Image (cartoon, rainbow, N blue to C red; front, side, top):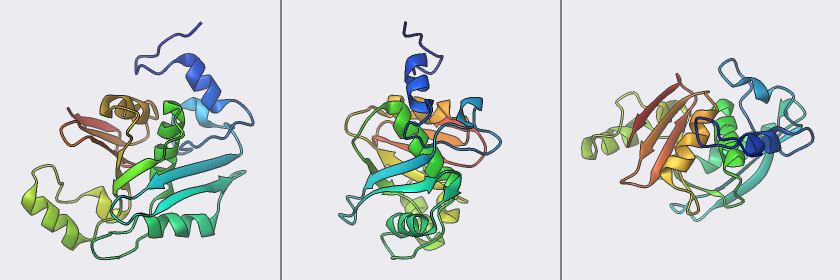
Length: 189
């Protein structure tokens, strides 16, 4: 039996993602949904950057602890590619990204469009686009703009929203989803 949840994610899919011993990545802070506690013992993130040509596929959390070297690699990977500036990426954002990726049941890495942004980069993007926030969470290392070839913007947004752990923006015309660890909210079309 495969019951659909309100987000279009199957109950069986959720159970598979959070089964004991499974590879899992999910937020564990207060707003994360209840199935996350005790969900597994490792978390993994897979990304590709068309901007830099770099790929990342690593385990960043094992048995309740983030791996400092892995987090440093993620920080570097998600740097502002325009300036080369690196900032600490909030682990909660990585957890949301990895949990949504698992819910989507894909092996394809995310295509990272934007991670950390310097205030200068954010101002430049804001001057040329209405969709860039003045106080963007990208400038705090708390947001990512992502794309998957094998999943639609709506599918990705539903998976991220199922985490109930941050903001999810759908940018269908530009074919990407924004995920952040700020207040829970949804926007876009």
